[in-house]
Amino acid sequence: MAKFESSIKQIPYSQKSVYDCISDLSNLERVRDRVPTDKIQDFQFDQDTVSISAAPVGEIKLHIIDRNEPKCVKFETVQSPVPFYLWIQVLPVNETSSKMKVTVDADIPFMLKGMVSGPIQEGVEKIAEALAMIPYV
Image (cartoon, rainbow, N blue to C red; front, top):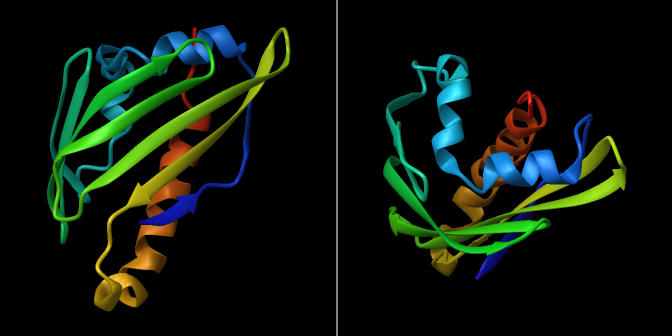
């Protein structure tokens, strides 16, 4: 397994507000209009599952497998070219702000690791950046 971690993102919302939003994927409706349609198609979700089609990767479907209120939500792939886990950690800074980090643990074959590590790290960072810009109210 290869681990990829985002930088820590500061979020101007309480830990509880952020956790409440990311632990229920139906809240993604709020940001549907921000999804870049040139890169992501077939963006679908319900309370526990999210799926996208992204070139050149193909379809990726994630399901929440663990909610550790109020600090972590863990996802597992249901469909993906490479099996992986993704978790979002949220820690309080004070009563009105928090910090977040996104981690991916992927089962990448050794022969592919050199080719895909850069794009995966970039993707993890973009996910964290997008999550940091969501209005958690």
